[in-house]
Image (cartoon, rainbow, N blue to C red; front, side, top):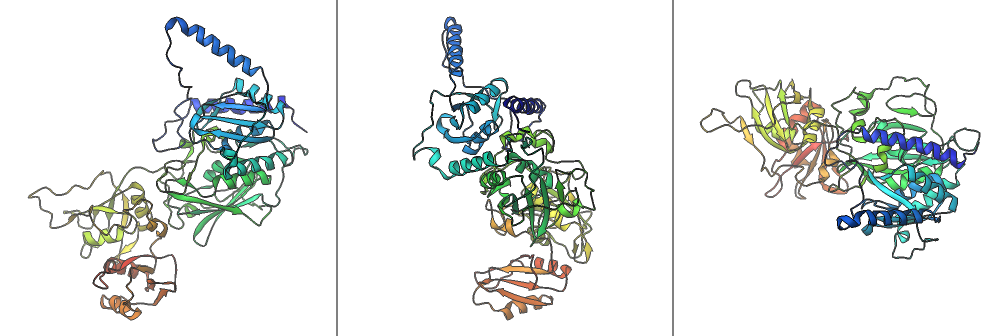
Length: 565
């Protein structure tokens, strides 16, 4: 059956009440989370007046607002919007009430105008937000009728931009879809006017999502929380293909899929990494057999769980295993409410960032801030600070190394960043180094102390903070894109044109390594792949051959490769 405006407003008011309730109980955010909600923002106060004029001025303003509210118009005036508010976010405020025909964002003035196709839609929107505070990015915004009867924009305004046009086209597609009314900010969809059945697929309703530069785990609930912002998510299937984490996400209509693709393609989930690459899948409907950590059918909660293995999913490729696995949704706290709750109201503030390491992203990953690792079960006859610096340097910039004086099979290693420490721990715990299975865990120490003058050390402590061999000194270094688990195949780079395949093989052979296969990159002979008999051999070769001098000005760079020859 079709919803009346009273039904729609009732449903929206319920969602808003849930949002306000969740916001009242939200937890404190970190300073570098874009989903920060420091409480409901208020309008900037007016210029100070004499005390005896305050009541008169307030009364005048109240009368003016009340008079304005009493003059319906298709054009809605929205005040106090955050500086980075997009056209799509403004459109989503109006979308539940009817078709949106135009939008104008005045970012310098923190204002926006929204034109509805029907005046009755605008009336419903103003009436609703008169009793329920509208929010954008955690900030209260004020909704009222504009004095304008029609919104006209020229080429200098936002309607001329590609983003505004794309947002309007997506909104138009949603409005024209089969009766689906989307609730912005709540991720819910009202029942379509087709007897209450879901729209089960069709062309361009399934998105294919590839996560690039995936340093942190992206679980299914995180994807749901992000994509439900743009429409009702029906099904999600996640998988790993060609060493990259991918997902298929199905919406009930093309409009929702188009809006999600337009808004999210090229955005980062976390700072400088986990970039979303989105296109349309050729599939028209997903066939989900199990509801588990890898797949979910939100229209059929009775499906069995199957044998999904969250540990296998979260530790694939070059991904950090989350330290809080088994505690439910590790990202529920930054989002303000638990994943899968009543529409995730905190996502009214969702803003991802373009794929740039200099920009902040969705939220900070849920990692402890430890940068010091405790490494044990080392081969004390062969291990040195330089060897540990080279090996752990594959996953981050090592600042200091201390082999314990009274326990020389153990060492403390300080990394530059917490996520580098987690990368090293994830990939190298139980790795065989010089014949022994090394153990790696987080240390309780905050830093590695250098020995004091006169204190015996025997060269077991080294400071590498100024080393020229750090791989990740530059923010957003491309080396972050080439982090892989230890493997028998090594990636070689910085090879001068004068050095041949035989020269490199001879260098490895002289140091006791057997080369199973070798291949220059066809388009770039500065790089090559070399395959050794085992991972143990490759680890030892990386330690000994990294920074090996090939010519007067070229030193070999060695890392683990995802490929094989």
